[in-house]
Length: 510
Ligand code: NDP
Image (cartoon, rainbow, N blue to C red):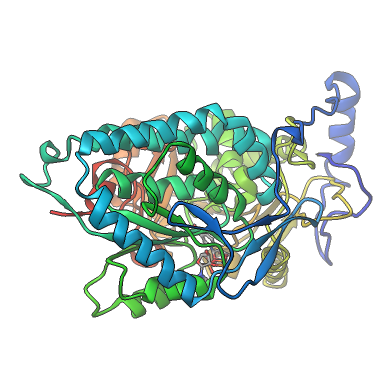
């Protein structure tokens, strides 16, 4: 594995098969003959101006929190503090919701839908114009590789605004009845894994449908949501239509519980989703929850192995595995299990871990120390329960939060690493013999968000896709997103859909 600078070893615990003995000679030999090293290709930070301090975005202006309190946001790749950010409390939530209510009554709801659309188009275009700035800021605050923030997060966020702008004046013809109405004020709480993209997923459909918003970004990744607030100013969005309250879980809880909020949309952990459901029960508020997952990525013996291995790598190592729909359980047919895991190990040997701003980096930093601790704990549990752990030879940077790509083989259904969401670059490999066994194992999870199927046979794809209890099933691909395609789960993965016509329905009183 190509790694960033530094000396700290990979996370080898007792009984860890690191691959140094089994693979490094092979890979080194291969290296010596055919592989060229990449020169560093760092993206410049100069395009972003990070202020020392940020206020809350309420009623079109940045203002301090009522308490005056601030909290730091750090670069997880270096632990360097990036900025101090205002910490919203209950008085700020009152202010944000009041601003959203006034904007709803006086500006946004009465506005002709075609006019609303113009603002969304404008926001989309500004996101494209400032794409590089957003990508660099996202990688600094979140730790994700620049090639992902540049090629996935930011373009998809712009695409969500474009797509929903197109819907704004066509809702009467979209099958929601003759006169679909907005719901009112939406309280939206988002996580840290796709900070800008999740903000776009929440704001774009809500605004297109005529609602106003109070958004609470995650504590560890507030900066791109605040830059998006600046874009709202730049687009001339009427004050109060979008409000951004940075803060911790308590601010999220206060927002969700606020009596002035008509609709709650949450993406995050199943545990917090359940708390929110309890808070909202009986209040008449509308609710959508996009929660965790433990997706099966099922590889049959007739699958094109090279393509499947790329799909497996993308499925679990994209965004360091901080993905609710990550293909964290690889189910591979027994007859090809050895061939697949061998190719997978070879491929992991070529992934580059290190500076998120380097354009060659494949694996960036873990978003926070807390998340790193969780990944370490679950990986240790995997070993303690008897699974075999493997990581490519890998040096981790000395500072920051890092975890090497890790594969567990010999995993059984009862292991914690096969059942719990790790939310990190850790793959659990299980095997199956028949399609029925694959189906039973894939569905043996309390979650139901996503799944992948790799096979040459269309009939097998359809057979399995119809029976998998997952909101999204990818066939011979993985982690493909499009604003027109509804995304969401059921059971412990939540309910409601985001994207497409279904996603709009969640913001309409039809
Ligand atoms: P949380 O669910 O705690 O956080 C998601 C968002 O909710 C954040 O903005 C958070 O604020 C806020 N929040 C926290 N508590 C409350 C509350 N009681 N009421 C309302 N809002 C609240 O996820 P974590 O960041 O703590 O991650 C924990 C685990 O959750 C991860 O290890 C992962 O397994 C899973 N996860 C799943 C995600 C998914 O998309 N499925 C996304 C993120 C995490 P704050 O940032 O201050 O905590």
